Amino acid sequence: MKWPDHGGQPHKLRSDLQIEFSGMLDFSANINPLGPPGWLLKKAEEALKNMSVYPDPEYPEAVRSVSEAEGVENGQVLITNGGAEAVYLAARLVSGGTALLIEPSFKEYSRACRHYNIRMEYIPYRADFTFPYEETKEKLSEVDALFICRPHNPSGTVIPYEMICRLAEDTARHNVRLFIDEAFIDFLPAEKKLTGLIQKYSHIVLLRSLTKIFSVPGLRSGYLIGGKNDTAFLKKEQIAWSVNTVSAALIPPMMQDEDFVSRTVLWLHQEIKWIESRLDHDRWHMSRTHTNFYLLSDRRMEDQEPLIHFLLKEGIAVRHTYNFSGIDGKAVRAAVRSRSENEKLMKALEKWEGR
Image: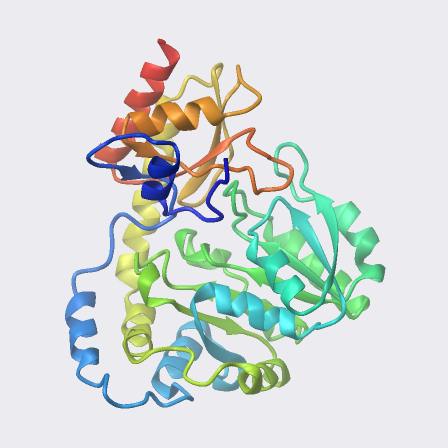
């Protein structure tokens, strides 16, 4: 069958597989189940009052809020239409060149490269999703850019900070741009962010998303941080009014809501430990995740498609991995959701075990 390219499409899966079910728990999309925070809807309604007026294309309040929160200058920040636009804009910096991708990874990297006629080289993650540092270092002389994902999508693992620092030095030495996708970085403790590297290395571009942590994928809120020359160039390349009035108005209060982010980090740490405690690890393999999703596979099967079908019949949608090169259906990806929802997934897995 033709599997959806992204998560968050459980009804399409159910329709394609002709499975009838009145409700569906969506574990396929990596959205914070604690959000959106209570204040957000009111702020969005207030912003809608300005929908008859074009937004300021410079988005000064949004830029200022990001720069203050991240400790960078205004000229280093570019507000984007979600993390996906940040990926495409970053690729524009090496249009016609060669990029190195570490697979499996978020598919928008390769799509953005194709869009800008960028040739792609690939290196696989190791079996336990340890980052292949030595192999990557050896390829840097052959490419113009390196895309990496931290936390890694789809495994949820995190490249150690010390290794990122070595990669920063290596890529600088070879004049290779380093694009680091931090779409899920807010699910980690604040000290895990890489913003401090921007002050030292102008060739690094950080790609961020606010839609995951604040549970607002429909708003398309994101930004990138880089050197002033890169952000100025990309601002000229960006489609005019790429970010809508509501999204731009909500970025400042989202950047200021540190309490909500801290509560999310604490909740996530506890929930991952609970999920790990409920799984029979002789039967199930779970990736060593640090964020709000994980890879899961039944060790008794090579292809997890029967599990996907079973869970859909139980009213649970997980994310397939057929379009993640190197996994190719050998695991499913599941979001970390509320305790009651996670309990339903665990009960369904127990039912699967007892068939």
